Image (tube, rainbow, N blue to C red; front, side):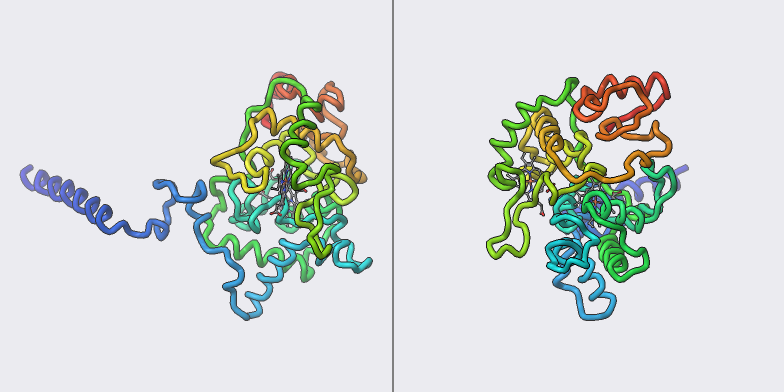
Length: 340
Ligand code: HEC
Ligand code: HEC
């Protein structure tokens, strides 16, 4: 009895002493594998604090492939699309770069960060209703966000993308799940998009960079874009995730105007929702065969802007809301809880 009491005391004071040591010396908690018990300085997860500076890579073959992947990611159209000046190079069909939506090279929280993406795949995908590989997921963005064509899954460009994404994930937890994935959530207004209000937000906030005609701004030497286009022939097509008003609104809330971060959104939820609706009502490239998406139709997000649907709501309501009624329908009819 006395013995176990003594041990309990040792345990108790030992614990206090350890706490004191931590307090005095403040060890680098980054080196602890179990994340989640302290608040990091910049991201919602310590993995964002690591070094993702490609300029520090060496000259090995492996490092050069990572650097190439980074170059493709940052200047996609200059390498794989129309900005290359080579007609034959048409993997990418517009002037966007992966980095335009996956900000800071895919390392920005709530800008669909790609840290740990390799670990998160293969993954079930509703759009195809099957388990998809990371190569297929990248090709999804090639065909839609880039309005282009699929890359050879075993080709050099795909290998470079994968090498870069593997390198981004070198500090990620085993399951690749980190906080800050996808986009910031938002309270979807219980009404349709107000297009006039959206236009007003666009004029007040977005025109400064994306131009009054939404076509962005070229670099001074014309070699590429300083600010990317939001619609028109050089933007993402109507099959891209960004054409869903809920997805676009959540991206915009956490990232626009440029410089905005998740912890300090500049727009209200209503402003983000309305301006997202406004930009997605403008004309943009049309992807063929969209009716083949979501073979299991009930899996389709409510704000997918193209038919068919497993519900009786109009195309217009799927594009602009109100979405609560549609979500309620899926809950009642199919017992499916939809958030987007
Ligand atoms: C117009 C914006 C846009 C561009 C450009 C873009 N993407 Fe995406 N990407 C998205 C959206 C939106 C998602 C879905 C994010 C979500 O819903 O969490 C996504 C998702 C992804 C995912 C899966 C992310 C995850 O966490 O599951 C990968 C991988 C990806 N993109 C790679 C790329 C690559 C590589 C490029 C360049 C070839 C690219 N994307 C260009 C918008 C874009
Ligand atoms: C200060 C300049 C600036 C302002 C203001 C700004 N953006 Fe952007 N926007 C950018 C830049 C730069 C990128 C690309 C990010 C990168 O490549 O690092 C971007 C990317 C985007 C993208 C994804 C890529 C594309 O072309 O579709 C969307 C959508 C977008 N902005 C919407 C908006 C909206 C809506 C507003 C107004 C609420 C806005 N932006 C205000 C600079 C700006």
